[in-house]
Image (cartoon, rainbow, N blue to C red; front, side, top):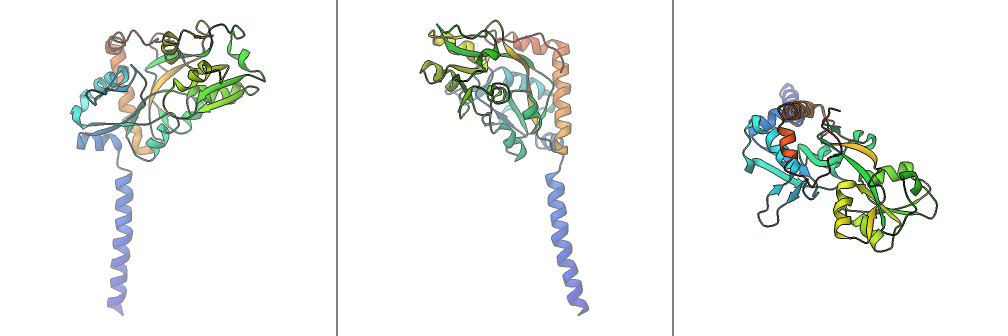
Length: 277
């Protein structure tokens, strides 16, 4: 009987000891894990010159990728050990929560809704937001002009325009498009399926240049000039990674390296001078 009891105790110890070991592994500090393995998984959203996958080489490139490489220099991570994982506007936070990647460099606005799901870095740059309408449509001069019954506004599900419209343009009809392609919203205006489309002014400028039958009605009067930030999950094990990223971004700003990288991308309408959040 005594031998049986001892056997049971040993089994329970192995089970619960194993579980505790698993929990400890799950909670292992993310930055320390990255340092020891010399590997990092990075979430991104295709966003033209800001972040994109080069179809000819398979490489992930763009402004935010250049900033990332500079930020990771002190960790001596080989480029081949940076794994890029594509996501979209409605799922980038879920990818962090479920551990699909360690860091999101998606060009995401720091908004109150998103801040409930992820922890944001300090600002990297700022973008204003606008509204595409037909070229001859002169009904709209500020964002509240769109808050009327009978007005249909196209947005991308999970993108900042979607959050803003749901909260502030409650009288209008919101037509949500899914996916990561931000051009789908202004396309609805071009096709006559919506009166307007909300998005950031970088996306809208590109779209209007290629589609002269539409315009950004708020080109000179953007709404919600917001910071673009990176993000990590809200798990305590990610806090040191966030602190590291913030320190590197501070260092890059103070040295002028961040401005140097920005100057390589004149096509991106950086909305204001660099400043800390």
